[in-house]
Length: 396
Image (cartoon, rainbow, N blue to C red):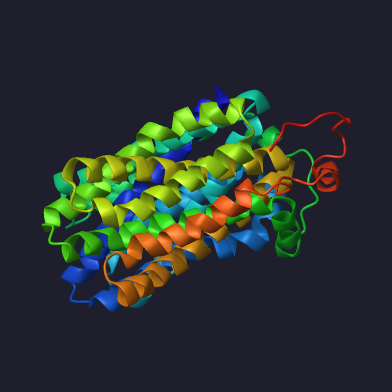
């Protein structure tokens, strides 16, 4: 029951991401800002996790997981209602940073809670279900803009309503505080380096996911236009990518519960590398191109789910919440570097430099995941929860 409630909260808040980014960009463009200024203003949306990270352990100890999520929801909703009051670059940057802090708090705590509440034997399928529901919610943003437009207060109020709707399941999930209270030796940012060392494969995977996913969303339309596709067709390419993400997450989660998770991750990374490498060859082969994009969206999204599964089986208590913070930071770093890295590839090698550059990134992950000994060391595992009795642990 509580798992369903937390997944509902995360999905409701997640639906605002696909609404807020295009909505705010459209408003700023209508105000006459050039693309560079619009992009610079949008960077505030990725900084919240860096503000939240050093305070997270203190927040959880003071108001608990449920209180932290409610605070994040209220902060984000208030920020969205303030934005249309004054459309000004500096004011919006500050408010977007506040919204980013609130949203980061909700995501970090909710994903950590889902991981903490999930039984080990079903962790993969539960996180796969979460990723599926989240991806479905992510489709709401474009629909809201199509129905309500981007002018006036209405779209901002709808965004705030999505946030506030998340209060209901959060209030009902009374076991959240217990889920993230046990264990942990959190020491803020100084503790993060140790967390990275205890699950290096998971953090590498989520970094590569950030690189590939963000670069594809930023540059796949440019790739399509360079090959002579219509603008509407390039938008459809992204929709097919998202559809693959929705379809594949749960089946991969089931596999992760039945097979060694490291090997499932290696398989998804390998398939991603192969499909990206095949994209230049099939770019003009109409039926196969769409199938390839569908599969690419699925296996790339599965890397996120599997990395989250590895985090959940490695950490406990407050350390799990801090590890999830580091998890989000690695996504942000990958997202920040991915478009630039892939853009250089396109400048050097033409349109097909995009899939080839991303294939190199996923190839590195494939090699790391396939290499023996990349799982959690036994000595480090003993530090996760000293109360755990010795015995065989799940293979990773």
